[in-house]
Image 1: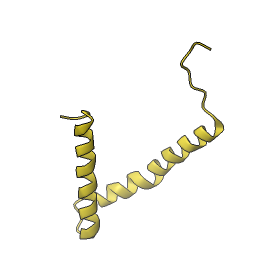
Image 2: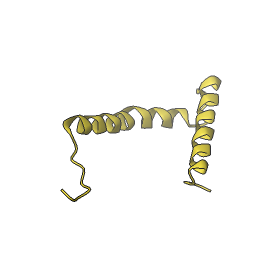
Image 3: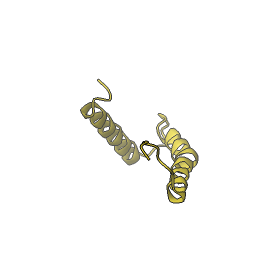
Image 4: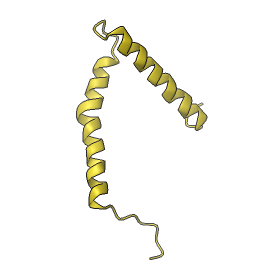
Length: 67
């Protein structure tokens, strides 16, 4: 009582582990492969990734996270 401490529930802990492991094992290596300038990246995927990057940049600017 009287503190702002958060007690992580079992579900919260498992959810955090799921997100961390998904990023580490799937997204990071997969996106690293796609984001190279390799000619093997299909143009449709390259276009969507460029759109995603633009959307992230716009959101970050709107939230004043970058200038």
